Image (spheres, helix red, strand yellow):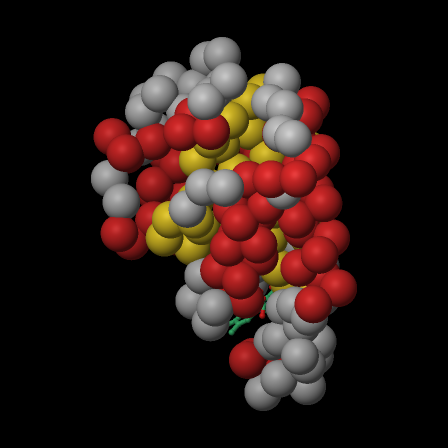
Length: 156
Ligand SMILES: Cc1cc2nc3c(=O)[nH]c(=O)nc-3n(C[C@H](O)[C@H](O)[C@H](O)COP(=O)(O)O)c2cc1C
């Protein structure tokens, strides 16, 4: 299956989730894309979609919710949700149900801490760190394999 059919999209206010998205994309040989810079049309044809964000007052950012609400049908599309958090990744079930409402099959979730500006960086300072990003790369490869993509180990 062609890697062009994998989309990695994110919303990231302070850059934490962007770093995770870039690690996921790098592991798969694709580009991570900020939803502020893409149109819905640019993910048309994707067969596997990674969707990620931080959590803001227990929810995904409004911008991400609106973006997902605008998606066309995702019947036949596999999806994975990911995100960063200060205390708990409560955006993930919301992202999951928005995608499921569009018909996507959400196969797995990934989260790691992200330095929290709300607490002036006291919570989760320095996260995501290199270990988090390595876990994200591993997660990406596992998801892609589960979705039927195969990569020669040497190209990962
Ligand atoms: C205004 C604000 C509200 C937040 N609300 C939550 C929250 O409800 N739960 C939580 O676990 N983290 C919360 N956080 C922490 C962020 O989700 C965390 O730092 C995340 O990594 C930010 O991701 P981003 O930079 O990709 O947007 C909040 C941070 C800010 C600045």
